[in-house]
Amino acid sequence: MVIVTMKEWDTLQEIPETITSISQAAELTGLTEDTIRYYERIGLLPYAERKANGHRFYSRDQILGIIFLTRLKATGMTIEEMKHYRELSMQGNSTIPIRHSLLEKHNQKIQQEISKLMETQKIIEYKLNHYRDLSTNPDLSDTNCNPTTPSTNPLF
Image (cartoon, rainbow, N blue to C red; front, side, top):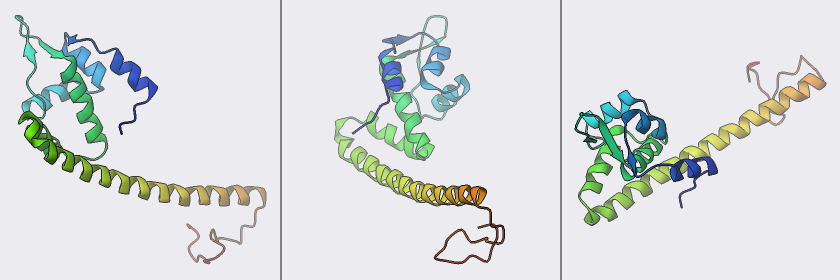
């Protein structure tokens, strides 16, 4: 299930059928013009079609594809992995099981990272609560942040 925020949904709804410039594509995707050109050059994105004057133009589907790639990148997928995924998608429906498997594995990796971050957040929240307690009841001789495990290190 893909979760899209209202802001993202509004943005997706505003994407016209044809994007008439690389600057407009950059604005819609959150990438820079240079990044879009680089991604085209390395084969991560297909080369954009060109107008008679040589300027790029993009379809709505191309922009949605770029946005999807930015989401994969934001979640730690490497450029090489994204290129492989794109190459598979260009081969058509016969690669759907492989693409599904790749995204399943990536999703599991994301879930593991989220779990690690949530555990780290719990520790930080515990420390913040400890510091709040110290600020209201200062006992500077107590360097222990965890009452069940005495700490000898004043940084923790």
